[in-house]
Amino acid sequence: MKRDNLEVLISADKIQERIRELAAQISNDYRGRHVHLVGILKGSWVFLADLIRRLDLEVSVSFLGVASYGKGTKPSGEVKITLDLDDSIEGKDVLVVEDILDTGETFRYLQGVLGARQPRSLRSVVLLDKPARRNQPVHADYVGFTIPDAFVVGYGLDYAQKYRNLPDVCVLHPDQPK
Ligand code: IMP
Image (tube, rainbow, N blue to C red):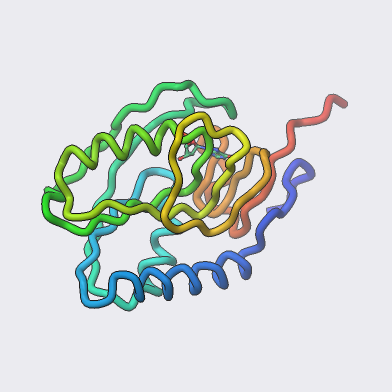
């Protein structure tokens, strides 16, 4: 798919290379333990699918759906659960898998909701970190790439539910008036 308003920021090859490194680090840190991955829908499932196949660990996975953005590129400031976990995380080593850390509001909300369910440990891995717009004191334990303040799509990330199928992470530029 080629469009004028999309510019490749991180190529599919670079993403895979970094995922191999992240997976090696995570496999090393959790050596000998069972890790329960919690994928945050919808943005993280492409990343999770690639990451999980590189983990040299015993793993299980469940998904939590959250909505924070609506249809625009600006945060609504409101986070809500759209699909809850189908199993208990009590006593488990939980690794939250997120697509992007932006203002940190979703992350902070997730830490509260998941922390209250008494996991044995709670860590997080994000593919992308966009620190420029952070307004919450949060950080991810594992970060794929730190990116500038731009709206990105592809590799699972969307704009109004579109572009999730792009293999690269791309900057979405606003349409230019003709
Ligand atoms: P936060 O609550 O502002 O940290 O936003 C986190 C959520 O907003 C992510 O899980 C994404 O779903 C969405 N988001 C933030 N920045 C972008 C972006 O550049 N492209 C697509 N979605 C984004």
